[in-house]
Image (cartoon, rainbow, N blue to C red; front, side, top):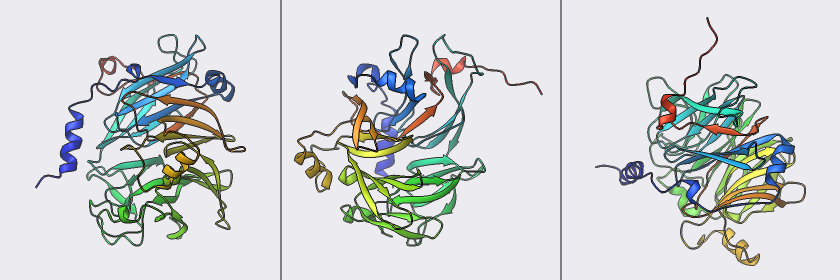
Length: 364
């Protein structure tokens, strides 16, 4: 019997139309272009609901510049020294900057990210991912409840699973979703529930989430609601307590945690630049967030859920800049910072531009 979810995902591949951000209303906070220039960064972010990888920078005209490409069910991102990993429905893509230092594409872009490798892993529900210190691709395999790496023959090679997961099965038992790297080594993961049954995490979404230390295989933070995107930054563990709408800082030594900022939307995707946290927010899949605490938080503050990117000053908890998407955009996934890049562009794997995107490496 065919998996109904897989059939639905396959149908989505046949209907990519209507998801061009150029057709969607975009609201940009005043001064964002100046802020990006002052910080010396640009951004990449994904919307898996629309299957888009979007990069944002500042063009020669000093205005914010967007460039987008289609990656079916685009999920996790990881940027490192001119290369970008992109998770998608059944593949993990490695994009490389084809420009040499000081060169520009179309007299405007100082980075041109081109797909160079696609690892076909099948539908394993890839979430967050990274290069480790040995340049291996490490990724969260949510469907099989494990941390995995690329295998040249098989769909994936497991490298770790929570101790309460008794077998690798395509059952999304605990909704393993977030990955924190520490000095090139996987350190923390987030789970939505401690369960060894198919979709078992769904029964305890409110307060059943946790952070697990991969090294000790112990739960180090519990009582979370749909947590995502753990990160080690500035000597602390950070995470998104998504079901409450909170960016959270955790003291690794004591386990003490502190709410840093409430964000109006379901949080998923977190990157840091100096004292700023950059997150993605999404709207509810239905009218409200049902039993999640974020709904009460929105109502108490008289706010509506948003879809887009928020830049939060972690010293004050205030949102200082934003990119908000409308139209068909309702859900975002991940965000990555491109340091030292002013105006990036990407070339999609199924585009006419890809055919002519030829660059020559150094001679042997």
